[in-house]
Amino acid sequence: MQSKILKGERAGQIPFGWDVADDGKTLLQNDFEQRAVSRIKELNEKGLSFRGIAYTLTQEGYVPAGAKWYPMTVKRIIDYEKRRMT
Image 1 (spheres, rainbow, N blue to C red):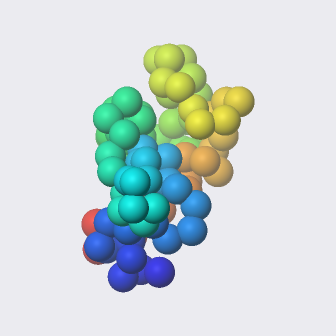
Image 2 (cartoon, rainbow, N blue to C red):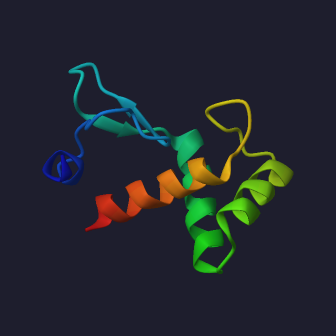
């Protein structure tokens, strides 16, 4: 799975911040969601907790994939971004 992630291909669920291309496997950046991903990374680098990041995203009006921002959702996004960058 890691090799698919590094190639920019789908590996399981479609991660937040990404869409699937017409070929069904290549991931394309979703510019709207990528703004939230960038903010998540920025807040994480400042040392905010996952709960703090979720709260900040809600307060700043970032739209989540589901009903609201959850700390575990923030963690999954951070974990995915870390795997993608290695």
